[in-house]
Length: 194
Image 1 (spheres, rainbow, N blue to C red):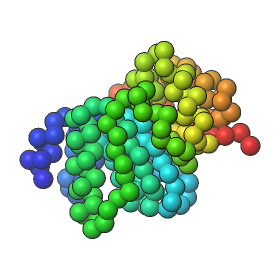
Image 2: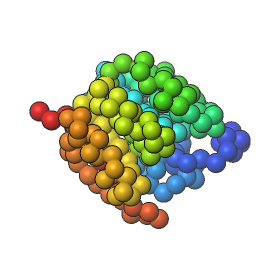
Image 3: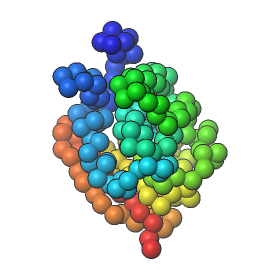
Image 4: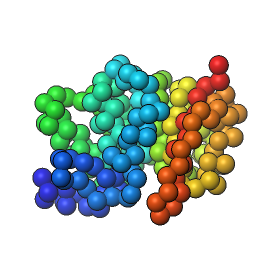
């Protein structure tokens, strides 16, 4: 397994494969961030549809699918998509069952209109990678397919940029948490106004 992980290149997400074995990635990304994300998700994930935009190595897809969610992960980079497929296969073998995850390797700008409705959309460290001319269009689309968005931003400037876009679409900030490591990251939940 170690050889496979090394062959898949540099890892961005920290993934805990075994008790004493994990990938080296960015602090507070991947499994270390999952408890904070999980606290913002519905109590029960069985039969929930979750979209993970910019899913990277797919650990959030896997963690949600292990709780019964149907997950779609979108990632444009081949290296990270290969990691996501490896992570999914590893956890399927470990838990002796198939996980309901569909991965799409493409830029979200190319596939977003055909994905359907979701109970939750994860946009962790994703929105600021979308080309500027498409950012408002993508946020509008996200708001049209869900009532619950969890976004992660690198710094207040991105949170201040994107939050008004969500608010114009009827989603308001429900929860904000920040973590400080080398930079400040904000995890923000947007929910549909009732």
